[in-house]
Image 1 (spheres, helix red, strand yellow):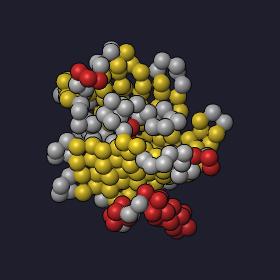
Image 2 (cartoon, helix red, strand yellow):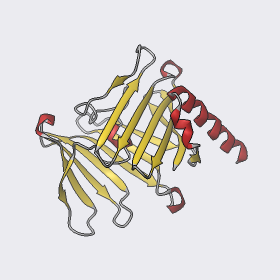
Image 3 (cartoon, one colour):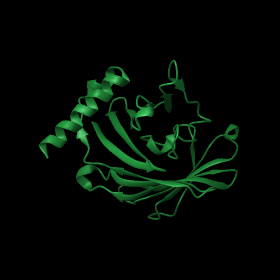
Image 4 (cartoon, helix red, strand yellow):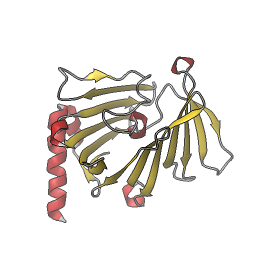
Length: 219
């Protein structure tokens, strides 16, 4: 129900390290997701915090950089853009489709494709996904604006069934410029206590670091 893992990438010549943590609850069906920047040092303390409530279709996203006085809320128009200083989108890290998206086309049975469209205020936004039939695991996602593909997320390597198919490696691309970045999970997901998510983002980050360090020591 609650887990965390580390992620590594290189953006230009800069090595990047992130921590990812997620908690699911069954009744009501909710998810809390946190992403923390660990490297480079100048961005340490940056985080994204997401709270999703599936039944009423609610999603709250906030982001914080060390230069800010307080976290800022990410409104739905910006929720289809990228996290600060990366090419990965907020929707790529959500547990479920953003609640403003409406399924407009579900491909032929067994084809593993579907298309979501945003409301009129989002100016022709569409999200196209390919998934593995049977598991529903999304392996390819393209964000379109006014009929033009602008960003792509791909799962290049999936974990096994024991990991609930959690991706081991993903690629994100800006299709207009051709720029792309690969993100690699640096180890297995480790369990967290559910109440670790009830404190501050900083205390959750510390709990994740302790859990990952303990898992590394056991290996």
